Image (cartoon, rainbow, N blue to C red):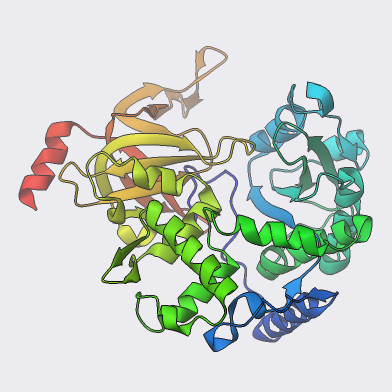
Length: 426
């Protein structure tokens, strides 16, 4: 599933970098080895396995948990905003103050800033983690893995339930090399680094902490290890085979999870069995990624909740009304999602955007700098007019391929009569 940007120069993970197959195979093998290292906790007499070897009888990774996210930008303007405004935003520091920057020498960082930059979010599950130590050791691990000597800055934010660190990495290292962070490092190793560092600081999770974490899975609005067990019980279909559950405790947990999935509309109970919706796993994973997807699913105005899909380039041009605009991460710079519904209720799309959403109005204007027209070959430069997107607007979205081959969605204003005409033609 691709993530889109509103414009080419905004934060996103690079999905096009590929390592050679031998390197990929080695990375996968090493990541599997890392998961097997460290002490494992097994359940007591009540912890039986389900059919297929899944479920609660599995060994549990007792390392500390840490959420790791990475985005990147090619914009020097966005780079400066991150460094000068976002990282040090008032109210996000300890005791509601202004966060302090740390990392490489700040003057040296500014002198070597380029457009390309990486932003990494580290959020440990435990509030006992020394965030500065986590960030510094994380950067050292990243340098060892990639071979770069990085320019970086970081700040700790305390304005959410989990204190966390934001890392900003310059796209040119101290040896003058352009920085590229491979996909397998982003997808696998970064989280492993963070978990190992957190565990080294405060030790492995206790059996009680692990048990609490498992109980949270019962109501978690994302795809969990317990959902993997439920998937195994379904076989090739979507009907849960409750007879495949071994152990009363396991049965209670799975039934509780299924009831919670039923409450949020991802499964039904009919004729003595649970039937999962066709897209239940996809919807849970989407919500784990954007955290507002299930909320958007329940707040559709025209379409049935089952119609909502995350927008990708495969959907082509879409049209409809903007029924909702969400912030997908309260502590990530301007990450939004726009919900577009067709007026006939046949389609609904959740469109992730990594900046405040805007749309082209269909009008043009002269580009100005310092209040004066920008000239090219002696003539004023004319550009298409954009405005902030608001709920209730009728729009169309098209994807364009940038010079780097990235598909980028662009939003255009449409009249309601144009949309209704399209519905009638269908």
